[in-house]
Image 1 (cartoon, helix red, strand yellow):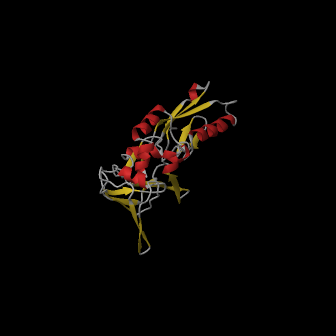
Image 2 (cartoon, helix red, strand yellow):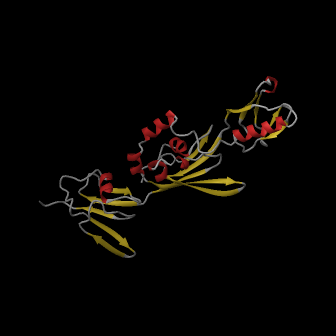
Image 3 (cartoon, one colour):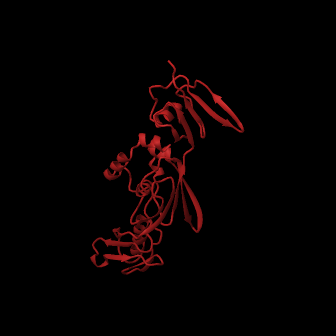
Length: 266
């Protein structure tokens, strides 16, 4: 699949989109946690301006209010919370802005079919695609799906990512925010085999929507000796071998198929 993805959405295009701001910074708001440094501005109340690091128990100390728990709250949620607290007997119609000045270091594990799997430290809001980029990008055997394993209320939750919808379909809702201690796994593609008169015989990824033509393109096309009208597919069905002869270029191929391109004798 990822060979198809590279044709549809080359890495350099993805980088340009990220740099230009076309892609959102993240899908879902960043959640503040211990180690983050946030600034609070209360308009017309300069004495309440605060820059504070979130403590290990997720609280900050705010003038007039004292300790306020902000752990795992978004910036907008913190703003709403502080606005209500200040409005409760302290300030009439408070106008508050909250910013993250420093992001804590977060550790994420990415495994599977990326070029550099392992632990990656993040220092700010990071999307799924940005994480993949930090891991060196998808490798040639990457499949059509990814999963994010995440702790939510002390329970393991799995978030599926449809890479076809994200990359080919442009569904940016799939480009989710990566959280601290997430484990991301990039699946592998089904593999097919191409032999005979093609540029580079070998093993290539094949998934939903892969045709004979696409598989031959991955194998660098036909050689000058190829018989394009005599292609065969060898497919195992249970313990039986089924040989499909003289298949057309738009014939679908499936995982573990063997594509044979014979030499033309004319």
